[in-house]
Length: 155
Image 1 (cartoon, rainbow, N blue to C red):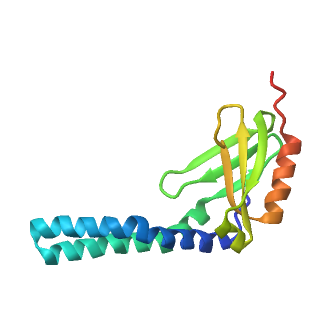
Image 2 (cartoon, helix red, strand yellow):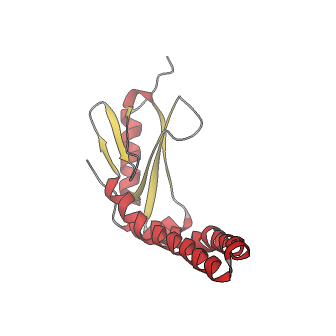
Image 3 (tube, rainbow, N blue to C red):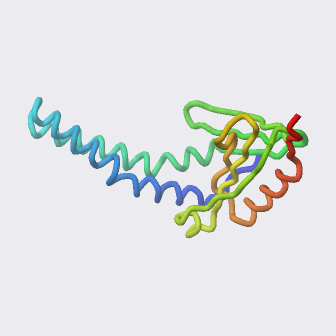
């Protein structure tokens, strides 16, 4: 089983830290104010601080766990994907069901030199498989290999 590039842990940490002021801080403030009105300012402040600390912990620790449990393998007949920290998921995408494969890179990923590979089958509009956190040259190589191996003939 192949793993992602280790830079992805820092990418995910940065993305988690960027989410703090937009999700965790408002949640902490709302929780603190709500409980402050019911149970007192001290309790509200304590619980609000705890909620924000949980968000910070998720931003800093969860990416390492996600990295640890993510893997993929390009096998003879399919692409095997494995993910999930609490709820584990293993899926196999047969090469003959692959319709198209693309790479994507957002601005923060570009800073880290990483890209993601998205695998689409005939089953829907969204990607059926995603492999984040690959060096761009590795992502492009995997995309080309999957495109070569894939090829739903429409029948």
